Length: 238
Image 1 (tube, one colour):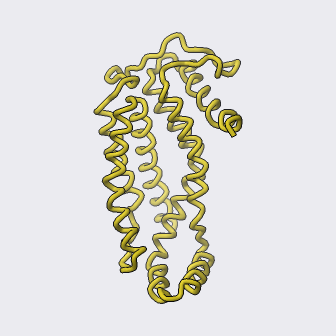
Image 2 (cartoon, helix red, strand yellow):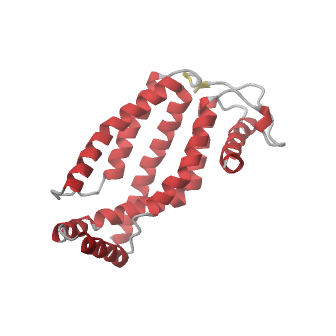
Image 3 (cartoon, helix red, strand yellow):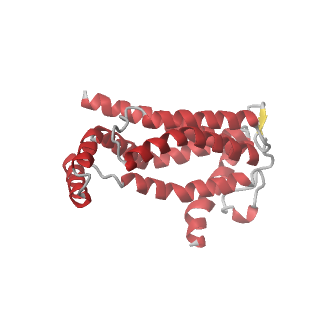
């Protein structure tokens, strides 16, 4: 498992980071981290787009799902059967988003491990065509040292996490159901909207500015992706 993780995730991403320094000698560490993060998100875009499309479709059939839950609240077997039938009728695969999450886990873990020890360079991990940079400028845009803690970038990462959550929920109608599951879902959504940004701030600040910059970049990309895909869907329907 470790071999597969390093061969297909950690080593390629690590070498991509160092290779960017090699081909962009003028770029500081912050710029390179931003570019690598965007590159990874672009590669994952087809899968992420599918997840957003599924999210939109799930929101569209939300009222019908609520009606099924209410109508068959005392018959869980029939409720499940009707729900699956609705998914099939509408062409919705509620589990498609899980695949995206599963694929992203090792990538996020690899990026986290890479940035955790940044800007140290382990030459033993480099491919033959990738060389150790002569110098790594860790001052992002001449303003912030991303190798150290940065409250400013951590705060921006937290704020972007909050707005990313809002973007992902945009267009979704809040469930009006009164069941325990519906109440729990609403409660969890409200708590996560505020808890997760706070968590991101503390993690980003306590590790380093480069982790915060990664979170900020990936959140901004996610927001742009959500808006782009949902706008495309809306224009297609219109």
